Image 1: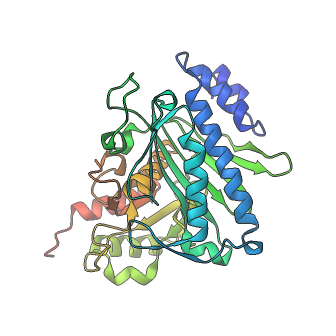
Image 2 (image 1 turned 180 degrees about the horizontal axis):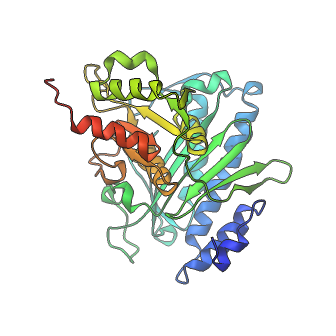
Length: 345
């Protein structure tokens, strides 16, 4: 990091200044993208405030609503979805939104408000942990509009169904002991901590890189007997190496965040004989692709066991996938075991 821009990116600078500095690398920038990141950060602050007082208000527990996946939505799920979609739909940089909580895309109807960016979002990851004061989070991905580029024509489904390698940016906000926003535009991975005393995200992780030979194994071991033999073999090898400890929160973004900083691997394999989980459980567009884009730019890897997650072409808004995300060494070993495996063996 010896270039002039990098020298100005130091711990403690606020998100807005950080965006302004890094924007200098793009002379053609119009400011739309910067405004978009600002709106995401603002919505994150609002959700963070509600999460921090969840036990005092009528926001805990399940609602009567179900999402597209047939899951009963938590009240905080609905709240977070409303906060983020409202913050983004009126942002001049957006043309269409795909939300994990919505069955259909949300398109910007007013021509004067349509921008060139597409956003996918999981407004609140970890709903099952909301009532127990465990960490939860928001995950987002940003793409460029590909249908009728450079025009004010409405966006369509094809704009959302893009592979992760085409992401312009991806990130997440984790609501835990502190609220942290992590994002990348395809180079460095930056982390910002919300200072509630001034209401600003301040740079706390200037250049995140995942460690290689240390960290945590993060997966739900109760499903071990349902996993493919390569996954079972990988788990046995990782345990026997003596290099890793087991930690599992049950909120993907929280487990991913810890391992991004400390090393290891997060796994959510397919369960071939379990209806609804044969193709994996995590959503490709809203969860797996953004975090895989982040982990790759931090020096790690994201895979479904056979190919890079960012290379997978989504066919539907709510496609699911297995996910192995972590250090290149551990993810690579899972892929190696799959290459050598036959389902008949």
